[in-house]
Structure formats: C-alpha cells, structure tokens
Length: 213
Image (cartoon, rainbow, N blue to C red; front, side, top):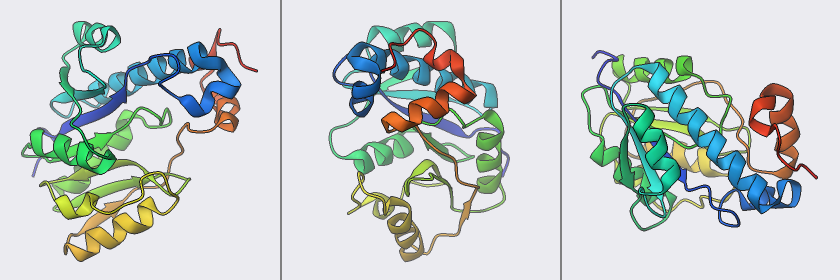
C-alpha cells in the first residue's frame, strides 16, 4: 500500500478567548491563550500540508465556519468540517470514518508543535507496510497521533480522555480488536502553564508578543 492517498484529519478548537487553551490562561491570559491556539493550529495545518500525503481536513469546533479556519482554508488546499457531538473519541472516530482513504487516515490535534512532516510520513509508511494502526504517544500518557486503515469504534470507546491512562487504554483496545499497530517515539504537547516555557525555548515565534505572566 502506498503512502500516497493518506488523509490527515486535524481536530482543532476555534481560538476564542476564554474558550481555548483554558489551562494556559493563568500564564498567558485569555487573549494570549487564544492567540497561541491560533498559531498552533496554523502550525499543525502547515505541517500536515507539507507532508504531502493526500487530503488534509480540519475538523473545527464549535463550528468549522470560524474566521480563523476560513483564513487557513483560503491559503491552501484544506477541507473544513465541523466536529460531531460527543466526547473526543466520538469526534476522532467520525474523522476517521469520513476521511477513508487507500492509505488510511491519520488524526492529529493542534497541541504538539514538535510534530513535523517526517512524523506524519513515518506514520503513513507504517500503515503502508500493513499495520492496522499507528500511534505516537504523548509524554503525559495520551497520544498526539493515531492512524487507522479502517474505522474501528472500539478503539475509542470507554476511555477517560482527560486522564493519564489514555495510551494504556488505547493499547488494550487495539489488542482487543486484534489489530496490529506500530508506535513511534513519544512527543510532548502543550497543555499546562509549565509547557509555555518549553515552547518559548524551542519555538519562540509561537510565544512572541504574548503577555506571559
């Protein structure tokens, strides 16, 4: 199976002050946290497009028609969809089901600036070699990417998405479904105030001008 024809689905929250990156508000303020969300989303879209694997779809919440999403779509070949109702698992499953492609579907968020095109190509290559699934774990116990050749509802069911056992439970679900999966080395995402300093050291342009406290 060729890497070409792999869909990349990006789940993104609209950068609205007070509603996005709320855990970073104590460090950046509501407006600063929303600005960082907008910049992280643009970085994720650029990374996905640069991987050149196939279709790139941004699944926005609460609505795909948010001006920031529309601006991203005007600048590049990007599909826009609204996320479905339900928990994170339901939203990821819907993106996988809608993005069905010969090379599978990779689902990412916007919280991992460490994710680069090479990671996406490596994940697509794993599916191309016959793996049913591919995952990039996150350092906090979750994951920053999951890829599947076919939609598998059980992979996303009965998981505490806010907990530290997401990756452990996902491994159980994958094994329970009889799926063969590949894991790439862990990456880290931006979730807590302490992560802001880490971002500033690696990617100062993402933090530039924000009112860090």
